[in-house]
Length: 389
Image (tube, rainbow, N blue to C red; front, side, top):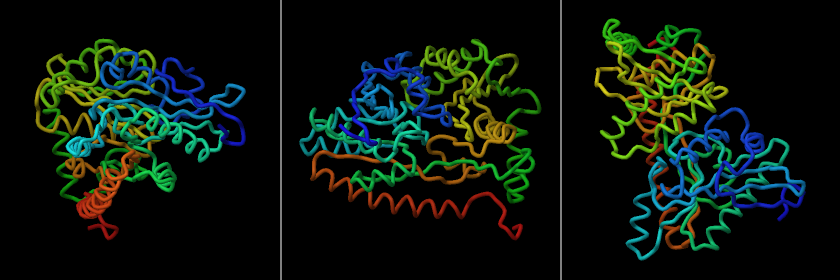
């Protein structure tokens, strides 16, 4: 196969650990920790993202004739749709009612992570569009050769979404809530940008969350992290997972690997009452973005979730000069905490022509609905207007 002016080879590699970390990271770049070799290795080596859990790694690796890796497409063969946050359960049910077989499917994503980032990791000296299209052809060829129903590329970057949409992939849009740093030097500057009512509400929530000092909140990263902190967070995470959705995606071994390989990219916010940790939030630190990921608690206290997940993340982003906080999937309650609607993008290839037409029609209507909802939500952002109102 030829791409970028050179003869190249694309192969399927069934595990991030079988790809050299330096080669992977040269393509992934330093900006987004979730597409680093270390994160994928954490997910797979801990047993969280494995064939036994329905996440069989089938990463596509493109090499030049001299062996240089110029592109990687993280890819999984999946026999379910859990841990993705772009929901296609309805598609699966409809296709199977019509006599089709939806699973297995191919999924290009970061396991259990609704975070936007590149889904085609391209070496900076390679031609991105050429590498993207070659990797996409490779993934579709795998699907066609193995009678796989579909390929899904979720939480892609907008540029990927646009370029690959032009190549014929179906385009889907959803939204999350992100906080944007408008040059604040302290949290009070952020409060000053809000309407009076929202500013008072936020101050009250922060005060009530810590119960006049009865609850202590710690923000830990790098060398400050200890195994006991991870033990505490794991307890909180498991308690909330059991309460909300039953089976947790992550395990203590995952957190151990994260600590050993990515501690400097971790912000762990923990709440402690009477000497015992009772709640926590896991964030990862990018070059210009703080990514909020997992929350857990063993006790329920008013507003503590907002303090640990949202307000402390804003504190940290302002302190570090980060441009943005991405607070994860769903949650319109984030709007009142200063997080505004932001689009997310996914791409889909469907093998069956009839099913493809049905999904395309659905996505057209869904995009219109998402745009309408976003416009409504924009009217309720908590920031003051330019005239000060």
